[in-house]
Image (cartoon, rainbow over all chains, first blue to last red):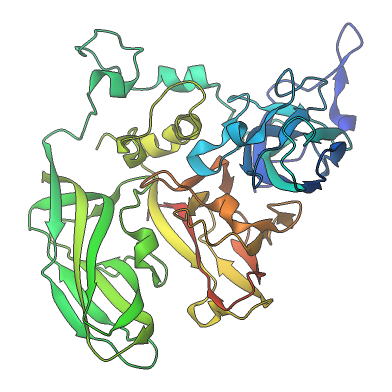
Length: 316
Length: 156
């Protein structure tokens, strides 16, 4: 942070004409991610209500709920510090919980404000369904602590989503002539001008697996083409072990210049097929280099790998 | 490059509709993507020499991420067998723990094909860019553990 940024304290608030404390004009804020974790066990044929105290030094804005479901059925109700409930009655918990993309989204823009010291109330009930055994479940209340900042020249003001959307490129001539329609609805994903969807493929390469531990620097070069810049969306792979040979392949991906996509060796099975959040640009004429290490290997046969790099390419 | 379009929008299950979690998070990221100031990078933890955890073993790993980056999420396809590893992440510069207590790392996974587990708000990497990643193996057996962070790093 620069010295022009200061955290806003309660004493910095000033009084409005009506006598209410208000923040000074030009104020900005920064959100710092946090998750409040709750886990419990509800006895069979029982109802319990427990508080989860909101800790921290500033207001926590609850934005999403990740959760692990109970072994069978438990009914849950969640009450927020605002006095409102997540739903109007106890509800089967397995209907409302998920992780990752299947999180439960709350107020998408700002979240539910939870001031320090207030409580989230979680009610668990096994008397409705009578599962026959105690039920455990876990909840991660996810959101952000919001730190308000005093006005300063270095602060970029927080833009509302409406203001952000105003800066987006307009897409006309869509199938339904509706510029407000979701992009998937018009089947039009604007790629870069003059670009084509392309997949660079490595040759199939075989390496002998060491019998004790992993090998390293088993390098495969995926050549791109001179005159084309490439924007990677994701990589995927095909891996085959010879008979009586096993292991866990790890890879490290870098551009020919040495610029890394991964800071170290990562598990290939978990990386393969995963899209990136932004395009990884490969400069014209630079190859993509993949190093392979096989962890926890057994046997002395070979592992055969082939890599695919999918994205846009554009002639420069 | 049409940088306002994240590659994640091309996921066949991502829909910009109300209550879809990914659409909500991606909308927050779009201004950063549109400026073209960042490029993706994947960090892993712990160190490769620390990955094998005996039953009930605890390790702490110091992870260094380029200051000025945005921590966007985790690349962690769901594996329903791996619920018994607990994790805590601490931003050392801010002295800020991500979670109020260690959580099952299953909560950082994502069962949706090709999608990372995105944070509700991107976390700014400031100061020294150092993070401490703590892992507890409570599975009852030896495990190899690895968590991958998806980061937007300032373009050089």
